[in-house]
Image (cartoon, rainbow over all chains, first blue to last red; front, side, top):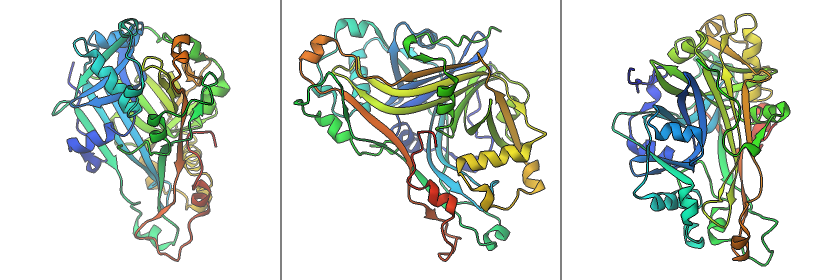
Length: 219
Length: 219
């Protein structure tokens, strides 16, 4: 089995090699899509993740067959993409998107030694400040949860960023049509109280802090 | 090679079999992640897509090696996921996300007979009304573009939707912490004019219509 190339094959000028820019993307969304091979066929597993230092970390039920396959060392590709805007050019051909996209290649391994810390970072990344408001996890909950980590190495990832203006040929510019970029913003809205949560209970501070914040840029 | 199971293995109660709900998801985001196998290794290709009737349609450069592999019939999994909210429970264990996620299994084929129409639908889905504002594609542009379609069949897809309230055990509810859901909304912002677009040129009607609209719900 060959190692996948990390060279961007199309629009190579959009490839980035900056680890800081990779981290910025990985810290700007909780959603990854993990590709793996099952019974010879490609499958895809969308899953929440966080970056912890030089690792991509996911978690889930010990009963998940796909997580079990990953824990067993199945080769994986972790894909993280954010759409940042619509590039409106003067032709369909030149129109496109602003995006940041990373694909990381490697294998996961199970976190055994430091599981509580990893889970707390997961929770506190998805909802900053939430761990301090919650009871500790029970032994039963910890036993039902698998945490997997995936190394971010010096050469196992590919990052592509599209953030420029439309590049229309002169003849299209001269024709006088409008061109530009429409930004796409993802944000957290107004919290909705659960039916079993009494009206007298104030909205948690972590949730108040999340409300209105932008989700597709690094917090 | 076995056919991938479309049965949801974890949280099976979240599986949906409604084609209408599948279409609603596919019509609510332009972003898919395509998993395929290259040199024995899983890889992932994020790409813009549209649904046209019973097909998932992508396009790109004829020079793209991964699109060429897909055009050649490489087995693929198409993953489309939208995060709709953060489920804030009274424990880390019960906290999660509202999401809609589909994975479709099959192979792409090249569109040859009806390429102009497919490309116009792509443009008019990403920016509704844009085609009428643009010149026609040139022969050169069409020759440089490959359009691929992927069938949505009766049994080649799996849909999972999480849209409920936190399900905390009674003891956690009684402890009195806040619980609920924080919605996640993706929207199109204020258009930014390209540097080569004269200030006297009005913003295109299609772009004005896009501005402020929600991107993670069906238009």
